[in-house]
Image (tube, rainbow, N blue to C red; front, side, top):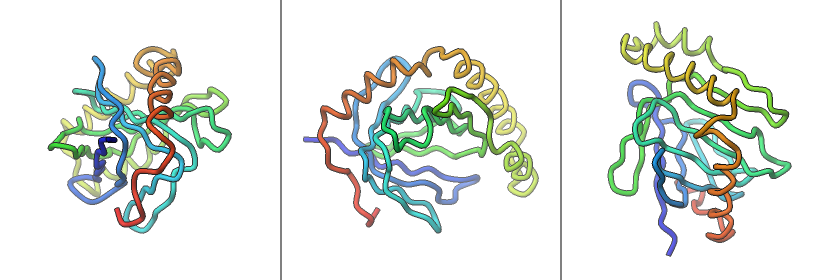
Length: 180
């Protein structure tokens, strides 16, 4: 039987953001790996969509980010997309974190950049991010940028493809319906 994990991402301080159900793939020294098959329903307030390409998501045990790695599918939007977040918290088969705007992205052509710095700066004021949240996000973003640029662990494509292979082996049907 496939184990399903409810992913409930939030925006500061506790507003709904992206939500979806994912396939539990396993855990390693870095964190917990979840998979989304093509067609899996993902939604956030005001928007919903089906995953256009298979991908795996790494929720680290204790770090300020969540990484999404896409299969080599031609429909993939990126190779790697890392959201800078508060450390993830687990309650049974549900995981939550708070998205802190900053994203570190490796495009399909290998280019790496930081996105949404303007949103992060704006939200520091409008959402009153505490100093420790700002510091944690900035430090994490710089660390992730260095590691992703160097194609260093845990952000190597080789590591991700091992987990993507597990996702493929787990079946082909999307996990969630539009009711999530």
